[in-house]
Amino acid sequence: MSRNKESFQMGIRFQMALTLSAVFLAGGCILYGGIHAQLWNNQEAQIIRELQGIQENTLIYIRQLLMLNSANNDEEGYRQIAGDIARELKIFGQRNLSVLDNNGQYLSENRQIQEAETTDDLTQALSGNAAFTMTYPAADRMLVYFSMPVTIEEKTLGIVRYQIDTSQLFLQAKEMETMVYQAVAVVFVLIFLLLLFFTGRLLTPVQKLTKISRHVVRDLSREQVNMQMMAQLADSGRRDEVGEMSRNFSIMLEMIGSQFQRMQADRDRIIELMGSRQEFYNNMTHELKTPLTTIQGYAQLMEADRGEDEQLTSQGLQQILQESTRMHQMVLQLLEMSDKSIYMEKRTVDLAQTGISVAQALDIKAKRYEMWIETQLPEPLPVWGVADRLRQVLINLVDNAIKYGESRTPILLKGTVIKGYVVLAVRNRGKGLNPEEQERIFEPFYRVDKTYSREQGSSGLGLSICRKIMEEHEGKIYVRSSPGAHTVFYIRLKAAQESALFPQTVNPGSRNETVPDGKRE
Image (tube, rainbow, N blue to C red):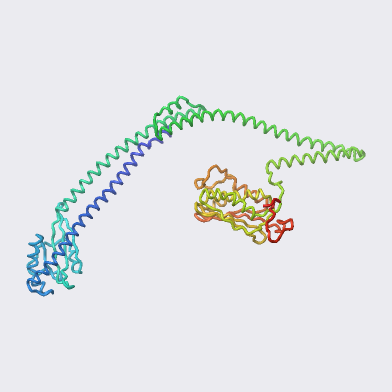
């Protein structure tokens, strides 16, 4: 019981509230940063537009003043009208300004602005670029210092520096930002409360199911199911996914109840089968004991008689031969029950034809997963073996390639003869196998992570059966792969005589008229 209490200290409701809080906090921070950046970018863009207008008007007024005062368009003429520039531009724009030469020195008595804490804008202007600097002398004030070079007829005559009070724009932006934050905060709180409400409404039946499931666990431990509890689940009254889950859970419990009865019957059946198995071994022991007893008895009689009675000797040998033959057949039948394939008749098999047949048979399945099978099988590829067993190997390998391969990639079935051996490879592209998996993949019941398989329900015996079949044929099977690359399974068998594929005389122009099992294509 203590484990149950510990498991619910971090219940779904608490985790959901914590997650929502974290999401809203992170969202609020991101939104705050976005709103703040956007508002101040808009403010800066508005200031830049205003400064561009000031720059254009300033240049126009200076040109006019030079013309009215008959001054030259050079630095000397600019110095002569410096006082007029400061006076006229201040009257026109109602802004404090200063007129400077190309060295940053103030001209005459036209210094109308105080020095700012930073002179980055003036430094830029001395380099030939118009620039501005925003300063905040108080919490509710913002001053912009704007320095621009005066360039006329591609000559820089001097510098004009403005001091612009943008406090009103600054306060408007702050008020707008505050209003947006308040509105967003209200919306966030409402959304948070609504989500908590709907989350609680969704989780209430889940908590109810959790409570009921604890009782179900208790009933299962006692090998019984509470039918009244099933009715309680069925009466949830909801028509959404949670209600469907409740009804499905109720059906599942009913099935569990019926399964208990089946399990009881199966247990009795297993006990009966175990008795039958013991009876089978007893009968088989008796069947083996009978010929052995007969053989032993006749052998003892013949030993005692020392061949004097020819009829006894003849009858004894006949009985010994008959009983030993019967016992031999019985042993073969037992072995055939455990491994029938060993006693199947072997003959020359063309792996090229077998591979093409397997590719055609599994091509439909490959296309189902947007894959296709390519073959590079020069004919013939003769080996000595059981056709059905070798076909089973190729089917398992190609089927695995389909299950674990990537969509829209080919599966290549390639064969060749190398130094008296037929080597056939099945290649696909998929997750790949690490070295540990390559060592263990042929073990019985070993499976690579099933989440990467397209199909479920494999027992993990396919590759171990393939290895067993290859051992039966004195061949080898192995794999080469690396994670995220191609995976290639190889089988290697000793090549048979190529002429064994053509037991009958055929036309040179019609190759592969006869297939290994004697049937014609």
